[in-house]
Image (cartoon, rainbow, N blue to C red; front, side, top):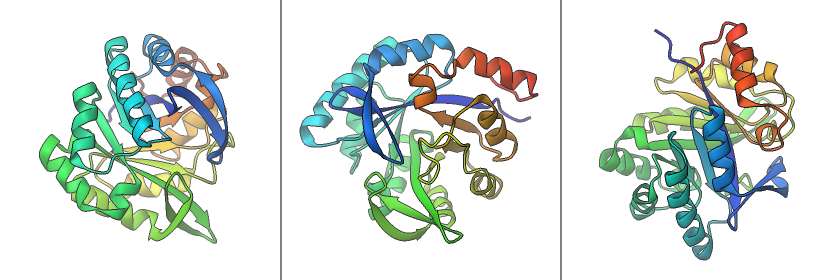
Length: 251
């Protein structure tokens, strides 16, 4: 039996505020993350993702306090990422109330971090986030919020992360991020059909049809989006109703 597809609003948090950009730059404010989280939870979002995009030492303290506030405001699972380098970071965020953590740059630099998180807290806690860009037909992984090339192949790294114990892959196409012209469905379909763990699609949602396409063509297990939700362009209840009429199983 196929599982219901999940709709996941993503909140990029900078200095305690939700922000959103295009292709990883030009950030603008989108409101208080805890208030937004509560609105999304009440509106029928299945999960939430919070990314600390300025994970400096001071930023981490603010972010951890925010996680505690989110945990008391919502009753749906939420994932937090940004600035997670070691098990102590994971412990701190789970203790603050997060359900899962998302690792990205640190996992590429120290792949054994995935093994450590999975063996200490369970695979279900570890989401491996991958930012990749397609150039000349090849998908390459990037570090540090899309600023540093790695030479790593998206598909090879996703398989290694799964083998090491990641519970989910969150794949963001940098080519599609914030552009609102649809998700990277070909790459997503390849990931989804070759991996044994769920794949969350990120980057490219602009209208409801894009969500339909990412589930049908991209075969994704979940779709993540930010600006279309933050700025009220798509209401979650409307989106779920639309997906149901398109024959897609949602919660």
